[in-house]
Length: 123
Image (cartoon, rainbow, N blue to C red; front, side, top):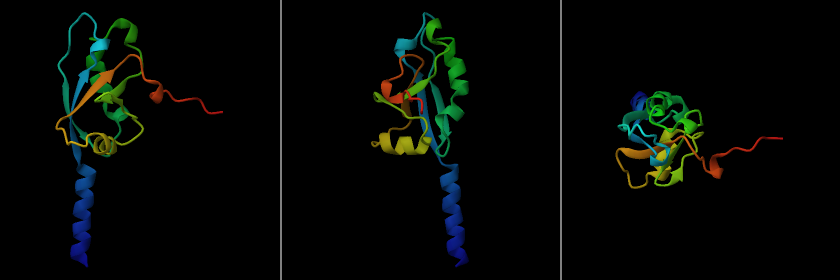
């Protein structure tokens, strides 16, 4: 019985420590005249959420964004599909990246969030 328990613990540890290889590029429509920045290659925790891991990426891309968009909320897309960032990174990758693209290629936007991402106030 203890062998099964240690096996389960190893599985849980691997799930908890799992990562998604990700490449994040700035969307072309948000670029300023400073030119396109290098993409960010990250190993993101599967059990985390994009709002918790994107601040450094946002800051490094911000100087390359047109001034009118710099203070906007950021959002991500994969193959034209906006990501709902309230879901864990691993879930989004598993559901959307069905061909197992590695690294997972995402685009970061500062402008024009799609209507599907705009939350409506309650009440």
